[in-house]
Amino acid sequence: MSTAILTGQPVPGSSIEGDLRSLGYDVRVATDPADAETLLAQVPGDQRVAVVDARFVGHLHALRLGLTDPRFPLAAIPGAVTAQAAGRQALTRAMARETSADGGAAVAVDSLADRVVTALDADGTDVHRPELGSLVAVVPADPQTRNEARQSVASVDDEAVRLRSAVKARDGFFTTFCISPYSRYIARWCARRGLTPNQVTTASLVTALIAAGCAATGTRGGFVAAGVLLIFSFVLDCTDGQLARYSLQYSTLGAWLDATFDRAKEYAYYAGLALGAARGGDDVWALALGAMVLQTCRHVVDFSFNEANHDATANTSPTAALSDKLDSVGWTVWVRRMIVLPIGERWAMIAVLTALTTPRITFYALLVGCAFAATYTTAGRVLRSLTRKARRTDRAAKALADLADSGASAAGLASLLRKLPARGPLGSRAFVALPGAALVVLAAALEGYGSALPAALAVLYVLTSAAAVALPLKGALDWLVPPLFRAAEYGTVLILAAKADVNGALPAAFGLVAAVAYHHYDTVYRIRGNAGAPPAWLVRAIGGHEGRTLLVTVLAAVLSASQFTVALTVLAVAVALVVLVESIRFWVSAHQGGAPAVHDEGEPA
Image 1 (cartoon, rainbow, N blue to C red):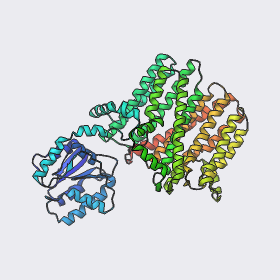
Image 2: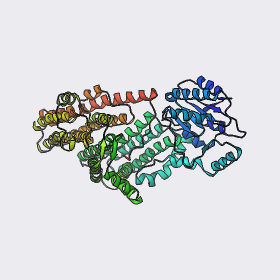
Image 3: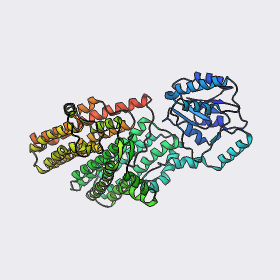
């Protein structure tokens, strides 16, 4: 239960007590600052507490934004300040200081809540102040000002503002114009019936899995149903975030579920399409796996680039300035958002092509579109990096090292290679990683199944991978190192499975890459949530990217094609079990342990 402490002179006819109770607060009235300090001390330290001026006039949604957002330890709007457990000590100190300075006199002119916020600012404490826009939140000093404030409140529909703010500020064209205009009302409907964002997220996953099952039937009716259900799953996917923003129901577990389920839905649908095509006599497993590899590598490029520049200093470039200028021209914003094929456009394309064409055509279109989008975004980021004057931090270097996913062999060799002076061309470790990554993939592609050359070059890949991470990844293009590792590992598995040319090899490879990709996405979400990378024992237990690549090439060299398929299946199951059990344990325990709530708007994925 949250507690609100009302201070100052009560105002006849004020709705503030009722508004606070509607937001879940137990309201207590303080007769003076000293009484407010006493009441504050009586509230258990693990509960949210707010100090609110009794003269407050404003919209209910302004109070909601200021006093109920779970993401911030301390938050304030004019006339009100709130603290969760993490900010309680700072609030108590500021309150004690203001009570002492006031001498215990009744607060009738000055706002105790605002003075406490001023004291928090003076201490250098971070206090979140939400953007209120047209919403009203004031503490009138006299009856005339109060009447004017009440008129301002009446002139603005805070429910309309609340609905608009439920929609993500930056999104793709399809989502903005074809989904959000009505999904926000679904979000409100869910909120009024007590549904949570996590429940809607789960419903979206179940819908997508049913869509994948329909696609797996291989019938035209099944494909049409799959396309319709995929769009409905995406509507629910938009609704869960809008529900979280509408009702301020943010949580660490919810952010993880939303991000993880998006990937699970899309890749399960790829598998469903491949199964449906197989029922019709068309083997498109290589295309399905290729689409998953390409999409995952695209995401790693996004994640790595953003982490490398997250807190870089002197972070300017002419390319970025040109991009900002283009964004000021209205139509170019939507064109540039559409050509990167974000999740809305991508799922709409997949759904329509599934219903009207064949899985093979669907995958061809997906591969071409994603390849173009990947080329466009990566080229732009390379140009930005080369023209950017930036000093990257130790935090960014550590994040990139975590995203690299180096196993015991690369980590051990890296400690021996740290004395190497060369950083590679343009000062980037990416050019150290490139030769080994390219050669192992080329050998797998050019050699026949069973050749020992890919395994031999995988040993070189281990060495170049270790050399790439031997020094901190602070170079201009060092953010390319994790995507190179992903492309080398996934690409090698894909090619060797295709070369095996036996039933089941590519589906087994699909399962292995899906399990490993889950681990890599999980690493990203932990870093984004400031939870740190997965434990070192987990990375070592599943081999690291270089260990898995070496193992798969050795298995392909010494086993028959049928035995290789069995080995890939066993490896996929083993990796999936280890990473899923540890990941679920971590996120559930973090949620139960009261980890800070997060809500990452991010880029359209």
